[in-house]
Image (cartoon, rainbow, N blue to C red):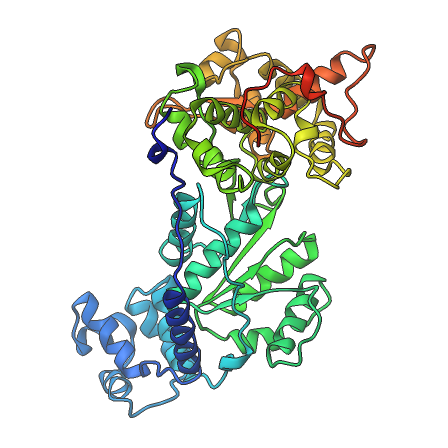
Length: 482
């Protein structure tokens, strides 16, 4: 028997007290949003002058603005300087970027615009533990808060967990009380609340038929995170978002996409499946007990009795299922649903022969994952498709040096193809050793599709019909039952 403790599912949970405090803090913050006091122009100018270590007289020489004018501005005796005077001072202070914008904002005077506290649309609560995405959450929060990235796309294949990750990040940002979050729900029905108007304008923006005036006025220059989950952006809606970002200097946008932007604007953050175990060390290898994919499977195994989780044979079977399904969260959740009726060894046998059956939840015959992967493969350029077929011949994870038969084949074109295959979700990182040479692998599900297409004469395994299982008598089953 295995030590049950090593199979414990590590997760991040938020207590009811934390949620209550978060709500109270958010209410306090949003009320303050309309009443925040910005520094005066004089205070900002004086701070900028002292930062570079010059006197008023020296600044007058640098900017061709009189000492008296500089003195009156710093004492707030002059409230509305001429645009040319302000430009000369900013040039003399050598201010650029954010610092220059801060002075210009102060010169424009205090804003009377903002979002009323009851008009914000906070993100929905996260009701399940966080598994395997802790580093992604931390990295994305860093990009938003400290990296200066204002348009961020979560890029990845369907079912990989983009929507859930966006919800986690939005919840963490909202709880931090440092940046209000507007959770866009363009398909939602009116609720009769003040937030309906904001949601309607965001929905119109995403349809590319909105004027930006209301949103630009509502967001103003405040630091706000606009989150757009599970929406396919059109070129027009993405262009409208970029225009809104220009007008609202404190606005940040986080949304998801199947592929990166064709226009090169913003930051693409790739989301890959959960890491799976390298079982080369055998079924009892410690790494197979802690992979995030297996942790997710265990968190969904309500049909297994608690004492069975300490059985190494069961754990090895579950780890094998996760590996056959490439650590794709939606596929793992679908497979876990079948544990109500069949034991792990039976599921593992099916996963090895026809993983798409297992990736389809009970009562759902649409085979979404298969359809998505088939469409992604068919859309490849012939050169990229050829690279994918060659890479699929590697049964073990490979480095860039191992990917091709000779160093001459590893050119810019081949590397670009591998990069494209990664962004499409057909190839994924597979680093078993932290800090080692990066390794990659073609998804097991993709290899199954390529094998089927390479043997058209053989009857393809049908995965869209009703789920048909081997008779329990035909599978050598252990004495336990799920």
